[in-house]
Length: 172
Image 1 (spheres, rainbow, N blue to C red):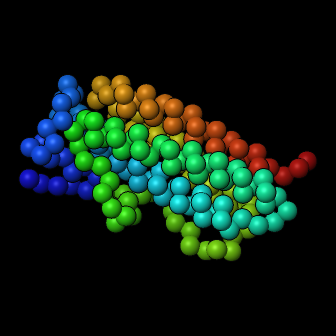
Image 2: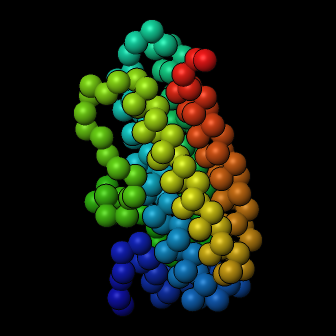
Image 3: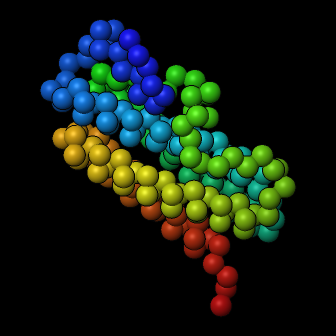
């Protein structure tokens, strides 16, 4: 059996019952697995900034990033389980996350608080775009369950983006 990154479907081993066409299952898994990787990477980045936050707005930003990181991590399991429900394999390792993620790492512990928030705002904007693309793929593949999950995640991502935007606005 052949494997491809982000879509390790093994029909003989899983044989999960679904009425979706196997080609559509493959398309959905290829769309969702990178999102799982990105959600984990964005969770780590958000937690990193949460841990390294400083400055006069420390408490507000620290709490906001804690809330956002909690929201991010709770989306991972349902999305990965969606891939499994359809009979495909999902993320199996940190290495696979690194290969699939589009979220840019930031290893610098000394980032200005506003720059942290702006970086997360941009990452969340990209996440919303990627979620919308995956939503379109789910709709085309007749995966109503996947599309429905993504609709909630798009809304939550837009909310995170908005909060980050408002927190970075300069007072007039």
